[in-house]
Length: 151
Image 1 (tube, rainbow, N blue to C red):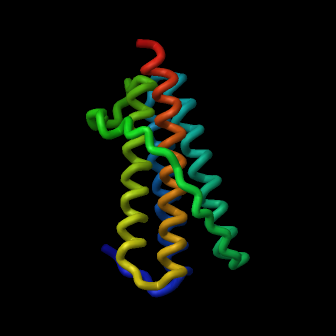
Image 2 (tube, rainbow, N blue to C red):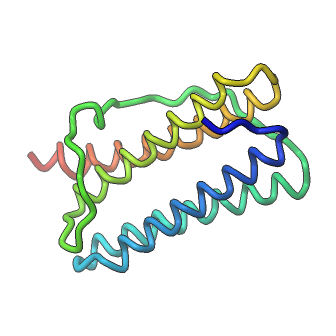
């Protein structure tokens, strides 16, 4: 796992990760044939763009506003099979893909937090992990509404 020397490197890394998520969701939107799924992926990309903008602002103004809020985990992703991106992806599959991506980002930031002894870096990584956890929860709730309530 990568080692960081300071907060700026962490923020640069996180900004890059958010840009990767933007690119990922835009690619999926472009490949989607379903108008509904295409719209959802564009919305996901816009949300990731906002996260990137927030991290960029944090880097520029230097104020570190971290939350220690706990986020619920419905653990829906624990029971779902992996989904591969495809042009004909249905909305529930798009949600599964988004949940899995956010879970992976959460794990990455959690591992990075565990690997440092620097309290400020640890707190930033934990905060970024919680942000990814909030994203995953949003997709889990949507999945619950769309899939579980229909069945």
